[in-house]
Image 1: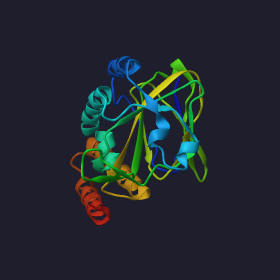
Image 2 (image 1 turned 90 degrees about the vertical axis):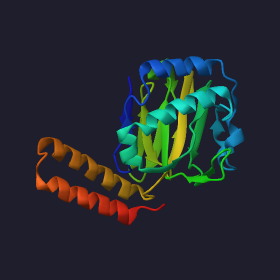
Image 3 (image 1 turned 135 degrees about the horizontal axis):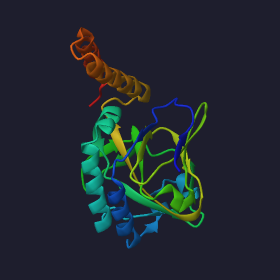
Image 4 (image 1 turned 45 degrees about the horizontal axis):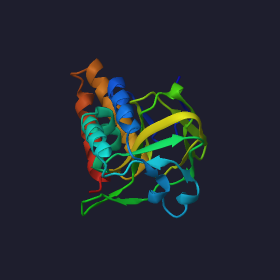
Length: 236
C-alpha cells in the first residue's frame, strides 16, 4: 500500500521509481550495517526539540556510495529536471526512524553550505526518497502542510516526492519497523514555487501537444513562450 493524499495547492510531485526496487533493496542492505548518529546534531535550534531520528554521517562510505547513485539518477530523470529546474543540488543525506522516532513540524533552513565546497544552496525544493517498503513499517508518513490542510505521503521504496523547501512539514512517529529514506535540497533557477509549477504544467502541455500534433504551429509558439518565461523568471 502507498498513498499521496491531499489537495494539490503547492507543487507536490510524486516521482515514481527514481531508484529501481533492486537498487532500493541494495541500499537498505548497505544501510543496515552503517554507523548512524543522533539526528539532532544537524538540526537547528528550533528543530532540535522535535527531531528524534538517526542520520548517516555525510562523509561515511555508505553515504558517498548511495549519494553518487542518487545524484546520477536525478541527473537523468526528466521529471525532476523539468519540475525542479535545478541550479545546484545538495549531496543526498540519509535518515533512519524506528522505535517511535519522529520529526515534528518544522521548516528547513533557507541556506545550506555544501560540505567541502565554497558554495551554498538555497533550499527552494526539497525531496524525500523512500528506501523502505511501506508495508515494512507503521507510521512514518511525510506530512506537508499548506493553507488548505495536510498532504500525506508514504511511497514505495525507490519512489520520491518533490515539494517546496518553504513548506512546514513533519514525519509521523514510526511505531513498527524501520523507515529508511534519503533527503536533499535543490536551488532552482526559478525560486518561486508557483512559477515553477506553471512552467512545469506548460512543459507537460507542450510535450503532449507535440505527441498528438507534432507539426502543429502551436508547438513552436508555446515553446517560445516557455523559454521566454524561463528567461524572465530565472535567477542564477
